[in-house]
Length: 258
Ligand SMILES: Nc1nc2c(c(=O)[nH]1)N[C@H]1C(S)=C(S)[C@@H](COP(=O)(O)O)O[C@H]1N2
Ligand SMILES: [Mo]
Image (cartoon, rainbow, N blue to C red; front, top):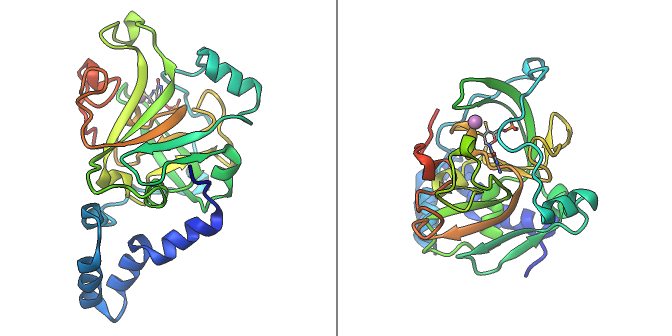
């Protein structure tokens, strides 16, 4: 396990393709330098790192006075309750699977990392929307620091909450554990962050404490709350019913573009 420091992550950003690739494209050295750099690339996934379309961002004046909490809002699972009682002091976010250097991050580590703050609109498939401000480290540099392997194709988010076969939540066809997955294009999208704060305050339990994903170009159910483990995989066929997420296993689209 590697403990990530702010310094090592900044090092990753400055030395890696994530930042320098974009800088070079806009700089005078232009495309040639970028191509030369791309040719040196070790990993196939680096080809995927394009900024792509950004989801619309709003101003502080647009923040919704009330942001509904939806889905699980107070997980009762024993391990999670213990973390809540301990103020998440012993909680660790694992980043593992198809990576060279698995990471184990405390909540303090997460707060120390360079963060992105964005004000975006959350659209739930149930027909409501709300605008909120989210802060946390972008996922891409974390995956890079963990040494994502070239065989990785998807990133899976394992959550703490379990619907336990509740009929109103789709029934018992799989374990009931909430999980989600995205492709590498979304994983390295600059607005894809591991959010530890909402509207300037640490995440509440209702909104996914201690951390939840923001996947801004997709619908609400992709934004996994209560994230305990981030796993890089080459396929999600072996997880639960094989469709890539709790709601996907119950018929929702895997790619839930807005
Ligand atoms: N772990 C987990 N993540 C989840 C859910 C859930 O039930 N459990 N619900 C999803 C749905 S459908 C929505 S709309 C958003 C709600 O986020 P909010 O509670 O911050 O509004 O979380 C998503 N992420
Ligand atoms: Mo939702």
